[in-house]
Each structure stands twice: as C-alpha cells, then as structure tokens.
Length: 437
Image (cartoon, rainbow, N blue to C red; front, side, top):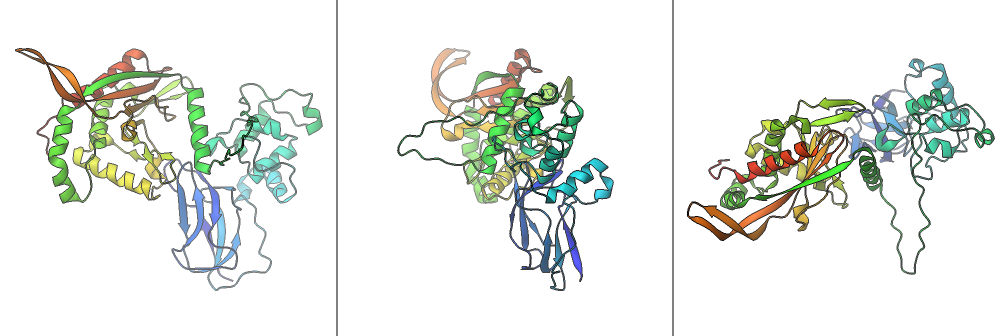
C-alpha cells in the first residue's frame, strides 16, 4: 500500500509547534490534492493545512487539542485508496530514536490510562506526553499547575517538566506530596488563580471564552506581571494632516480602489521617532537588553469574532507613505477575513493601537510582550486653540489628538518615554502638506 506522510510544516519565523484544533477529514475519507485536511492553531492564527496528494486518509497521529512539533508526521494518506485494517502503531513523537531514554519511557506510557485531565483547573492544556511524565514522576495536578510553561499560551512543555524535576521537583507518590515541599522558587511560578465562585442571579448568562480570548487574557495578565507600566501623554495638532488627507483621499480611492486612512501616517511618524530613540526598540531578557536592528511595527486590528490581533509591518522605516498605506490595508483586510499567516503576526518590535476608532480620546494600552512600548492614538477632534502669529495670538479651530505611550519602566525611564512620544507628535505636527503619493 503506497502511503504519503503528511508532516506539520513550518508556518512562520520562530513557530515550532501548533495545536490540532479540528480534523476536516477522518480515517477512510477521500481527499483531493490541496483540499483542506486539518485546522491547526499557533499563538493567535488559525490555519488550514491542505493535503499534498490525492487519496484516502489512512491514519491520524494527533487528536484534537494535542500539540505537534514542526516536522512531526500528523497523518498518512494512502494514494491507492486502501486503508490498513490494523495500521502500524506509531509513537506520538516522530524520530523517537533521537530522544533520550526517559522520554521514550514517557512516550510509551501515553497510550495507557491517565488519571490527570488534559485541562487543569486554570484551563491550561496538558499534552498526553506531559501528563504521562507527570504520572511517572508522581506529580499531581495541583503541582503540575504550578509549573511555569514556556510553550504557546504558557503551555507546559516536555522541557519545562523535566527542568522542574531536575531543579527540585522530587519523584514521589501523590500521597507523599502532601508533606513534601514543591520545587525551588526559581523553578516554579505561582499557581494560576482558580475561578472564583461568583454568585449567579436570575437571568445571568455564562459565556465560555474561546481559545483566542483565553490566550489574549493570559498574554495581558503576563504583560502586567512582567512589566511595570508607565504612560505618558502628549496632545498633537494634526490640522495639516487632516487637510492633506482630505485633499488626496478621493484620488487614492479612485486609483487604488481602497481607502487611505490615518494609520500609515502614524506608523511613519513612530518609525522615524524610533530611529531617533533606538532604545525604545528593545526587548528584555533577564538582565540583558536586546536592541533590535529592524523596526517592525505591529498594529492592533479587530477580528470578526470581536477579538484583537496584531499583524506586523516588517521594516516599516524602509517603506514610504504609499507603501505603508498598501501594507496597512492588506493586513487589515486579511485580519477581517481570517487570512493572516503566522508570519504576519511574528517579529513585532513596537505596537500602535488606534483607540480613536471607537471615539476614545486616549487610552492606557498594555505592552505587547516582549516589546517595551506601545502607543495608543486617540480620536481626532476639532477644538478651539490658541494660535500664535507674529502679529499676536488669536483663537482658531484646529484638529487635535492625544497620543498615549505606555512603556516598560524596567528599561525605559520617564525622560526617554516622554521624549519619544513628544518626538512622534513633532513629526505629526510638522507633516509636509506637499507630500506626494
């Protein structure tokens, strides 16, 4: 019987694993080349993986909610339409001969019964391999919940649980664990808080969080726990930008078939200011500051589900205003249509979010880890303002907006954070009204 291995492909920079969320074909189903076979999820993006050949699905190696590594065989496709009645048993992890003996023992135990649920009280998902290792080492669920995970969405990986064991997690029975202290503080994080018993009143509705909302919640809480947030505010006069956009927007729409928004102008100003203040474009790794070479600006965008996602404009400082406008529209459209790729949301070094879209004048955004800064741009309002002239001051009507810059006070002090947002405002206020697209 001729069979083709379907492996989990590399889906973007730094993406090493994905969660199986839905099999679109089952064992015995026929499938055409390029027809969707399975839905997988990385950090925030869901992808459909197509079949590389036509045939019949002969075997599936990963169940829904299990995590596969890039390169793992996730399914077999029979090209002659035959399906073996008793397919050869295959380990969950491919190329097991490269794994050490202790991991092999744990993998072999995956097929056995497990007393640990795949989802802990905090909602964390635990793969069969991790649960098997935990049982073998006498780690109960409450102790498993205390392990800090390095996987997607804080998931505990094989390496995490072995590091935990090596750094103090003793091999003991669940009964013994009641009297044995857990691992050393540096090896285990504080357990995630369990849901509180909130009293329900008549008419109350319970809405379960979807997978993305859970990830967003974890990401936001982790950011606030990681970075001491400080926010600086500046008001910018954007009258020149308002008038210039009104002058060119109809021609741009007629020529390009799409709208010209304010977002590319904001991104251009931020990219220029980052070049002036490169220590805004950094990440923190323990006691080290990693200064990023590329300026990759993430822009928060709304999904049809109501969730938010942050596609990234790579090397934004190398694009002119026309290029930024085209890229902003492309990413925004792909976000609305659920067509973003894993690469589209990877590698951001600074983020901008437009709270003005909702009529808000300012905001206090949460930093998108591992970045150290994020800027919220507020609504543009027509307000009375003092205008200075050589002949004296007078009151006039101007278009103004607030910029809110939240930054990580571990590495960005008030002088740097405040100077940066002021520089962004300066670039906006000094916009050249003769700019050509």
